[in-house]
Amino acid sequence: MKGLARRESWRGKVYCRLLSDLRSSINRGNLRPGDWLLGENTLADIYGISRISVRKALAVLSSEGLIAHLNGKGSVIRQRSSEKLKDAMIIIESACLDIGLSNSYYLKIRKHLEICFDKAGIEIKTIIHSNKMNNGSFWKGLSLYKDTGVVLLAKTDSSKLPPKNFFKSPLIQIDSRLEELDADSIELDSMSIGRQMAEHLMELGHRDISFLDRENSRTLDPLKKAGIETAMKDSGIDLDSDLVVASPYKTEGTVSAIQKLLETGKNFSALICYSAFHARTAIAVLREKGKKVPEDVSVVAMGEDYSENPNSEQLTRIDANIPKLAEKAVGRLQWRFKNPEKARVAFFSSVKIIKGETSSKRGKVP
Image (tube, rainbow, N blue to C red; front, side, top):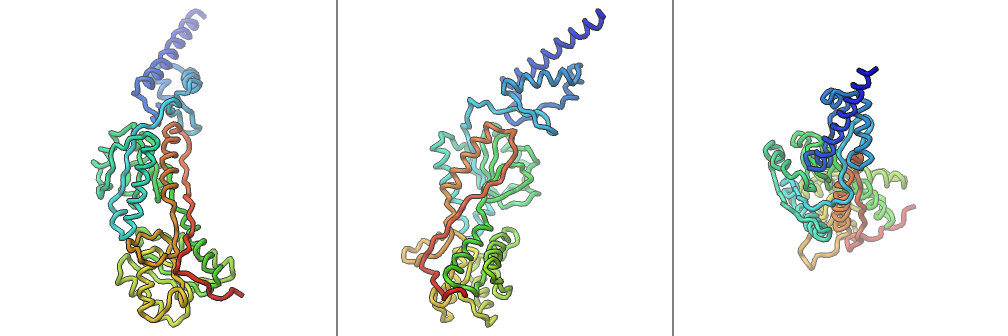
């Protein structure tokens, strides 16, 4: 009994040492928010105590708000509620800036992120435009920013990404959902964009609706087309496959696509375009072919319009509400900094239609 008592006393001291070691490592910053503790079995072996004793030590740390236990995953270091995110970086993959007028979209997001970070008192350490996301040294360099929030705008594939849990600081993706990163994401609701635009045209009486899609497999968004088809089916209308054509972000490609539409010989009273670039080019081509816009054909765009010509007619288009998107991203980044152990979530950012001069009524739908 005396030997047993001596052994239990020794175990108690080791349990206290484990608790003290972990608490000190957290307070000194050796273990940072988002870091995972070694497993219970490993800690038990290192300190020569039972798993029950390990769990007691972890329970104390949990009650102090230093760690959080996630079933099936283990224990992770929590962010101190009294602390706040102080630094951030913005990473934009070069591909986002190499796809025609959409570069204005990403630069506009960057501008409003800077405004939101400034309002929140968060310093932007660096803004990176990179085409080296498949370079290991690129990611290794970013790993040095351990207490810095990261906003990522990328159109990359998983082969260019670092492993899960690579970033020790909060990370949020905008306009993409790269599941390999295990990060929060905010993106436009593409399905809603397609649905809203089709509903707008059907409210104006259009039944013969055509669709000019974007011909680029890397960034093609099938959800916009799905939104159009769903809205039309709900109204008893089918999207004619002959009236669906694709075009790259080039003027000659759009010219060719519109020519292809006209050569089908089928009537269409409305044209939904993937982007404002496609829409403005399509309008010019249709008018050259003797079609009046919007009298003969209503033309709308499923994207924002960045035309710098003040005399251009107002295009019926989508407003992505970028200021709100940026505000939501920065707010989520701050929340994630204090809650690193919570499950990752994908958010949709709401959009609305700006009704311009390029769409008009076309008789009532029977």
